Image (cartoon, rainbow, N blue to C red; front, side):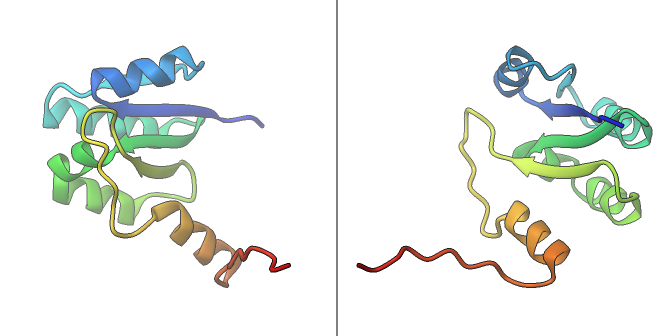
Length: 113
């Protein structure tokens, strides 16, 4: 089965993803509608990956964290920087996800020579 990608973000971020072929997009308007759309993506059998911008995830706050604790294996939800703020988190969520999945830290080193 192939899964679809969804994105929730500001207009610039969503437009970029839509132009790259992402079919499930939502431009953040207010907290309640964004939470409803996120819940819709979370129960969809078609969505396997949801991108949400850090700024919006922080804005919806405790409800977002509660949804992440209660969710199933799919869809994977990743917070990403938006085009305007370029927010870079202290913890790289993708790195942490891979580390938990593999069960070990993967270190890439340049060869000396």
